[in-house]
Length: 410
Image (cartoon, rainbow, N blue to C red; front, side, top):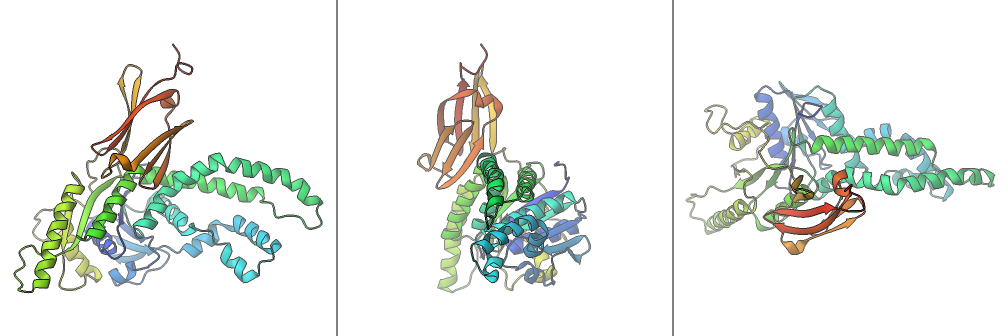
């Protein structure tokens, strides 16, 4: 278990596939099984309150015994977390002649909602009030940016930030002599960024903990949606996040006897896509949720969806523990192959060899997959080695290393 001791399940998928419904149904089933559960949304669309048919606010609201829900209030968190940086930015825009109303808008940093969402998940997990945290994430593109953020920000901070800080300190004496001193970031602003980096690193550690955290992909059996889910699965693995289930939503019954040619064609098309999904996602559990005659809104409707996902509570048939962590291999592994030979293996499902490039740069391995890049800090043993080969096969990138004679004791 992670230090927080809380089970975290993140739901994501292309907009409109039903990820909010799946996450809410899962949270309800966890609460029904006796786990104190918090359901939270990082999706700016704010559809979670509509699905539950319960008004939500920026603090947890009780939904039913054992279950509370919250819609993150990014503005309130921004005002609480960014006082130092906001003051500096206001001063900077004022010196540039930007009018106050425009300056107010510009001080809201790009991507800040994703940052605050990550920190909120970390904060709520660390609070110790919950047994399970279910996160209704934004659509896949925003979710990938959110989950890639801690590592990318840490890289920037380690490489570029020290230079900025040294320059700022050097500019202060000069600025003080000017008739109109330039806006130089105060130490408080730099300290706020350092603090942010540490909190984001803790959030990443929490969300990549294979014992407690997993991602569940929600899709509908359509070609475009399936293609995006495949890319998302690969990108999540690239960044070290573990997917343990695929939910195929809004599936027509295969034996539907309706005489409509339109419906028969949809059933046939969905069955073809379901076969493709089963082939694409290999050993991942794939759960189907039927197309319902009415919209699953409110606790009763969502409980019916939970029956499709995890088995009926009334009959106990095919009962599945929604908190169970799927048994998938860690997405990043380092092992000794033989004496003085090592291998770094990175799970990259659903990619071809020509979609992957990898290069060594100092103490880092830079991996690019279909336009998505990750900079991996090599463990200490591999930093003292030379790259001797690499391959992509069976859903894994494997890079082999041998000791560098100049850096390895004889």
